[in-house]
Image (cartoon, rainbow, N blue to C red):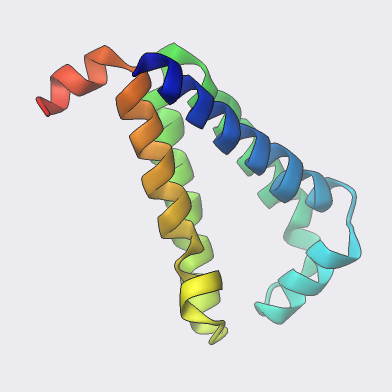
Length: 121
C-alpha cells in the first residue's frame, strides 16, 4: 500500500515538473498559447511554474506532504476555474484538475499511515 502511494506520488510530481512546469519555464509555445487561450498573460508563466514546482516538492517530502497537497489543491482549483471561465471542454480540460487532485490525495493517503490514522478510513 505504501509502495503504491509512493509510485503514485512520483507520477504526480513527474507530471507537474515535466509536463506542466517545464514548458512554463521554457516559455514553450504550447504554454504561451494555453495561457492566452485561458485569458491569462504569458507574463505569469514563470510565477505559475515556480509555484507548481515548489508545491510538488513540498508534496513529495514526507514532513511537508500535507501542506504541499493543500497548496496543490488550491493551484488545481485555480486551473479548474480558469478552464471553466474560458469555456473549455468539461471532461478533458476543466475537470482534469479534479482527476489529478483525487489521484494526488489518494497517493498521500496510501503512502502516509499518520494521514490515514488522522482520517480514520
